[in-house]
Image 1 (cartoon, one colour):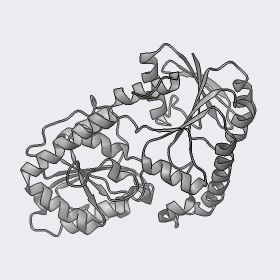
Image 2 (cartoon, one colour; image 1 turned 180 degrees about the vertical axis):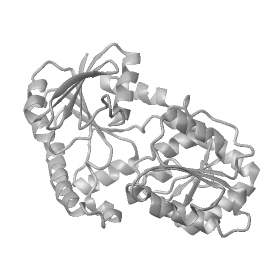
Image 3 (tube, helix red, strand yellow; image 1 turned 90 degrees about the vertical axis):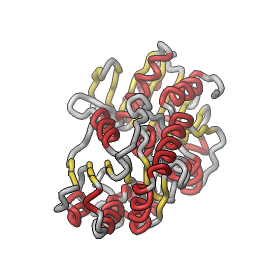
Image 4 (cartoon, helix red, strand yellow; image 1 turned 45 degrees about the horizontal axis):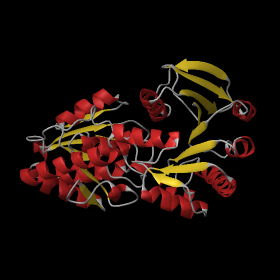
Length: 369
């Protein structure tokens, strides 16, 4: 099969993190079948390059239309943008399409009011309104299309915000590499707390996580905890200021590679990851796979992956988070139980090999197993 992958950014030399998960998928697909994959990145640049064995073209809408005139058996789209939609509707109705809905391209700006103070928020509102209008048009007019959502929450909210019902769809979570993030014994690590978050949006609730640690810092035994905080972004200095002078708090102010993250997983027992909005929570699921006891928020898609007090803990406030840390770090038996259950849940439901097999079978036209 000849398969075209359309996206809005893709890794290249000098910037290897742009939609890296899309590249990971393509390489994994190639391990199962010898299909030919071509990537088209829709933007205002023009370039052609090979990245890790994958052929990539960057170009505008006219070039995309030209690319679609070639013979492709399948089209895969990650992040269906309003610029792609008219081109796809006009030139690719006859081709089987598989479209992943990740979040920002299908959710209303009203769900991002936590970023209201951002200087570009009004611009975002305008662009988001155009995006959702185009998405509604696409869903109503599209043919030969299957939508893939990573959670039930994502599908439900996308339907509500766009104002449509998705008829042909599948729920397939993002796959978690349980070999890289393998289960480790957490005995003796119950008071080792890890945070790995971007500090560039209030979506990631780093202010809530650090407020919880500030509350914890007022406890007499606070220095018994070993805390590692990883991330970068405009809120980093502000959010970490209240605990930056404690000797038991270590900061890593940069982006980490997967092997570095796995190493930190091995050295810690609690993964603190509250959120204001998540369609799955991939970093949370990676931590669960490694056997960390996660503490997250009781909102959006999180409860589909964290069963409270069984595969992790759900909280509604910094005060609750601080209390949970105190309780779970003292109960070694319960800690081990949740750690084991968390890892098993991810292996059973989000194992990367199983997820890739499901996606490949879907794309190849076979039923999911």
